[in-house]
Image (cartoon, rainbow, N blue to C red; front, side, top):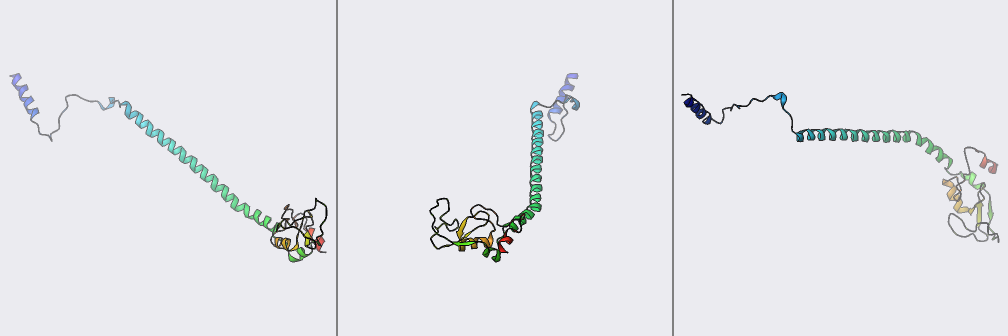
Length: 176
């Protein structure tokens, strides 16, 4: 009789509907589950990628903030420097320009004296009106240097300033 009973139980289990839950004959303990090696390496790779990404974002943010602070510092300090340098090289007044010495060019045999105007690049001819700048003695055509000096207060050849903050009376001596 026990054989027929086990046969009967086996028949019942073979004809169970699909929606009925099947009871597994083995008992599993969820505390002793050991993950597979592939799952561990995938988790480590994701964690490592997140750490590298966070590091790169922090580095980029740091670089961006340094740039912002440097630009802000330049915006606050450079306008004052630019204004000061612009005032220094802002050009001469007509009264100061006319006071600069002029002379008539005569061809000299001295090879050390320049024989052309550094502004228009044409040669000086006998009878040309030329103007010598006081600090450096560079000669220029009067028309050329006057146009230059309306917007600049430096020599076009050597960039020496005709007026400076250190000696505000340099051109006043020539005028008086």
